Image (cartoon, rainbow, N blue to C red):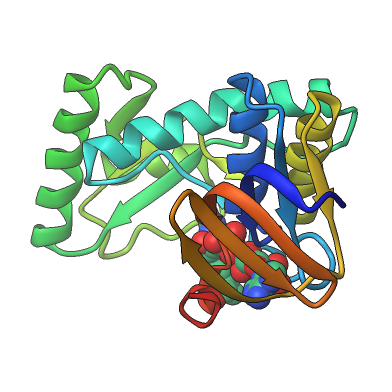
Length: 211
Ligand SMILES: Cc1cc2nc3c(=O)[nH]c(=O)nc-3n(C[C@H](O)[C@H](O)[C@H](O)COP(=O)(O)OP(=O)(O)OC[C@H]3O[C@@H](n4cnc5c(N)ncnc54)[C@H](O)[C@@H]3O)c2cc1C
């Protein structure tokens, strides 16, 4: 580990490793990620690994669609299996308000170019999942691009793909504090200080403690 980098990313979860990957991909070579324990030892380990396109916020929906397209690419670039299973998924509406919400989301998806979703009647939904009871179901939305993933493998894949592009990451390096200086930051770790231009605090639940 050097004592100077352009960017220090703090936290080796899915956010930190994705930031590291994207910086490296965009040509930022002098970047490092520091993880206090092992990669994916925070929330990214706990996650169920469900991947969804269904989001009421068009920006989030577009970002999720981007990620779903990216995942097979990082698997290929890294050589790390990410256990991605694109099963498709149903979201059910059991109240008129929820059904209205689903229909409104469907229209948003159409307007932002996400076309692999469809609204279904309860009977149509049951055909997609015959073991499901549709008692009380008013309608459903099917999305082709839904499924599940191995979250630990995904973090490893981002980090490995980033490393292949020249980025660095280190485990067992806890950041103790940050100090802002005139031309950047001093990142104080238990293994020495690092001077950098930019800090990305991707420490998840612990971000406030980092600074
Ligand atoms: C039970 C559960 C189920 C979930 N299911 C889903 C799901 O199905 N689908 C979905 O999309 N999302 C799901 N989520 C949400 C998802 O897990 C989180 O949004 C995501 O993992 C957050 O990633 P992160 O990188 O921000 O945080 P984290 O994965 O927590 O990464 C932060 C990292 O920072 C490190 N760190 C902390 N302090 C320091 C320090 N001082 N120095 C260095 N490193 C430090 C930690 O060790 C950790 O590895 C679920 C979450 C939980 C808890």
